Length: 354
Image (tube, rainbow, N blue to C red):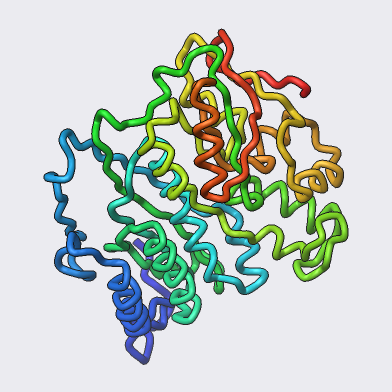
């Protein structure tokens, strides 16, 4: 092998010189520990810092417990967070997304772990992200018990990071919501989203910032909001509503509307012999989606499989239970729309006009 033509460095080369500041990382981790402890319940053992996070499962509360887990990320919504310098909401986006994913199966969140990878560690930014994670975990009754903070210079650009999470929840087997008993004639209800939630951002950013030429702080008349603020609205948690509905045994199935929209998410809970007939125009479509459609002359099918279109959660209920469902939602101050019904079919969503 050829010998190196360069002379050895006169000074010892450190990990920090290569871009990984261990001391700074340790300081960030200490602050993360403080934030995480605010989410702890008596079931969390050992605190933060071990090779594995410890959680004592209280099996006495359940007759036949089933653990339900999910993992997800924030996606390219992070690009907008970098542009705007807003880092305290993406953590909530991530937690709420994961909570919804297990809640639709009837599960109560137990604990959450995050993975945060960055180029050069900026403690203030990391603290803001983790503050968002911890706040959302507390609001959802979920313990933030561990995770990983990785410094990867040369892999991520300075000032950028990636964020992903993993959640575990529990539900008694007889309270598991699977959609297996959904049948023709059942109603499909839609609950409103706050905006894009965490999906469709690659297309939305292209249309807003390239096609329309908006700047993040530009006020857009069509949506009565600033471009960046509208896109950064937090992905909401439906957990309190879901818990009330499932406790009253009022739902046959629920679908969290994320990437793929109603088109791809609703079929995930349908039996093989039925389809969902969804009536376009039966719910209020948020102005931001109408504006995105106009900017790119985006076809209807593309909109429906890219965005949630103003529906963040769909619920399938028996017609005879609808009045009770509507009364409960009204009591909770939650708006809803009847957006369709279940028909005989082959596990697809079929769109009709209202």
